[in-house]
Amino acid sequence: MKLLRARVVAVALLGMATLACAHIKVTSAWVRATVPGQQATGAFMKITSTEAVKLSLVSSPAAGISEIHEMKIVGGVMKMRALPSGLDIPANKAVELSSGGVHVMMMDLKQTISAGQSVPLELRFTRAKGHMATVSVVAKAGFADPFN
Image (tube, rainbow, N blue to C red):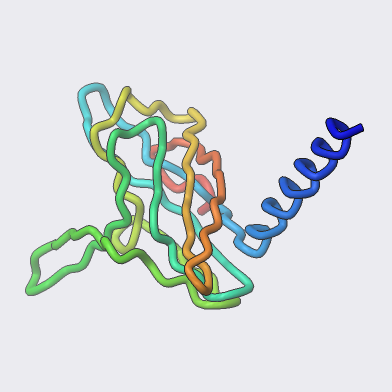
């Protein structure tokens, strides 16, 4: 009986954990395909949340390093930098991670990423009061945005 009760509690807690991040929605996720020997690529997507959150960490088994990056043109020169403090996602407003702007930079790639391949990404968000939420995404690889 104790074992059954423990299983019921575990299932209930798992359900609550799933509901805790249900307010964050990631759509149109894709990763730019690579050529043999290429060691870096970008991941792009749209993120919405019913509450203000911060995208604080991204990881993928396809890359040794994944960072939130920003690309800007400053004085006619392209500058790219990591956003170590993360990316704010305002409540009820879609934020697009796109080529030429804020995106996920995947470096130290483990293998060539081929067009049509599925690439798993794990996104960690910081919520109010420091609580964390994790969203797992499967992005499709391509040489161009498959959603445009």
